[in-house]
Image 1: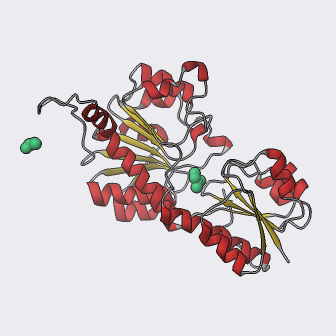
Image 2: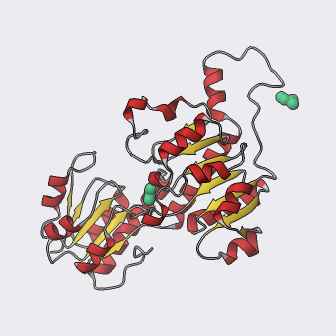
Image 3: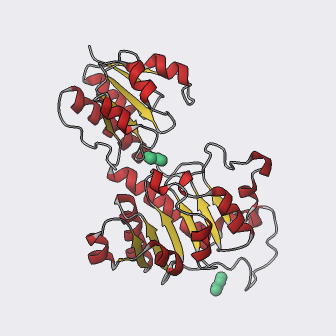
Length: 328
Ligand code: GLV
Ligand code: GLV
């Protein structure tokens, strides 16, 4: 009987599919990130591993698993936690979970953050709950509209394209994007214009990051980039923390280089702030909104992730091609 190691309890849907397919599942029983030692012991002799974005899957893991291992199905859209070169050397297939439901959830969360920034929702919520609302005022908590503004997408893949659809069709925004490849759909259907990243940074009112974490995207947003942004612009990051240089971000926020930021991911995750001596300075800005890496945390998205991971494992263990191989 083929056996699968699951590094943490996930949505039941995919686990049920794997059991029904006749595989033996070993699931790490604690609801916490698996420690390294237990991970290395757990993968030993397994045919498949279902991993999470919090598990570094590197040479040591492939070695510990041994020659039976055929697939690492990463329960995430991103797969920067997996060493693809090591996987290839060990002839192990790596897959991710880029389903429409997941992408929609991330795109909606991106939009929720944009709207919350523009309409100052968290500030207003705190204000009202602290009992500070004494009477309507024409100047109280004035924000900004999305309508008529320019969205700049850095990375125009599947998630970026969904954000573009909401922006253009839902809110009448204009669209700029920067990407290695042109995106015809964005240009034809949403009036998107491909520009250099510098041009995008200069022109956009909302800048949203949708690139994978690669050596070339680490600190893609740093001092030089923040200096190009409009004073009135907002930054949204639902991609990966290290895409934004946190030290440079703090400096830019202190000197009000731009209007605000919403972050779902952090450079030193799960720490919100890399430098703990800063006493979580990011938390101190009223124009910064923080959510704890929950952009795909909806029932539908988590179910889809679980099902796609299971479908990938079933396909590969049957000697077929994976549905969604991890590709850069
Ligand atoms: C979440 O961050 C994911 O990559 O799915
Ligand atoms: C605001 O409440 C308005 O009526 O304009």
